[in-house]
Image 1 (cartoon, rainbow, N blue to C red):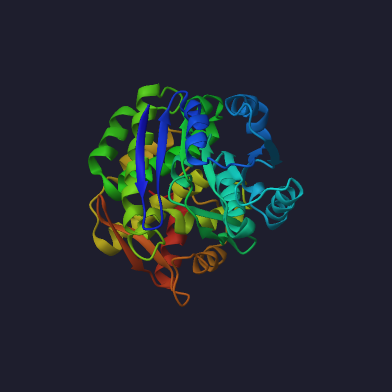
Image 2: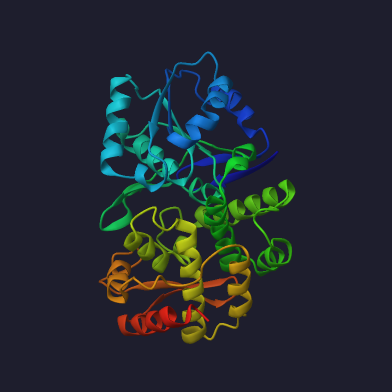
Length: 362
């Protein structure tokens, strides 16, 4: 099993990565929380059916309650958030209690936000069960969605640990594997050309990834994110680089209705678009055709959905958290591994989107 330490201005914590990593949980809890009163597990309906018994067996002897929420982005609503707070109050959680966020990125975001706001903050641990959550579980950004924007209501609140048991990934459907792997690709593009070259050479199908390959690229992605977060915990500067592909990606998600197109599938389209903007505006040298061909081999669509309004997408992007005074800012690439936060005029965005929609990114 590997471990990575994430260090920020407010907090340092371990990320345990490997088969059977969940077995580390009980000893970690015993050492960390000597006066623990209770544990609330927040999980979703899919993960709970598959793995809740296993998690509870690791925590034998502890006072546990379980709150099951809808799967995916349906968990990140005001209603579900309020319901979780009510459940915590009904079960008498106090400031010595612990929340375990057990599921994918949506459950991690929700559970972390519940922990951040319940009694002004109680401890929580991330136990991710998806590839996508290798990104979302690390770094302390917790949030729920608003109808006008994704992750618009939230906080920066670091977990006390991340327990990343790769056994939980074995039941993931293809769509969830693609969604998570898009964030791996993002990490490579913004930080490490050699890592990107390794991915191109070694990952030709998400159905035939070996355990060793999976552990390598997840650990590498976590280290890249951890290095950025350690320098900029609250996204005042370089942490914004982690949003490469997300400006358009989040707009597509919102327009499709959260869950209609998965986060990673939307980000994949957003990355292709950001690369084209980078080539046009910053002179990026990059083999876009090779990149698009590889994405399609892995099962991604790189097309902007035909039914989406360019004007509505631009309006969505103006609500992006990176935007200032209604000026859309994209994370672009000056070179591979060298991201740049760049203001892009509305007219330029619209022209590129119109062309992108016609050509499918080619």
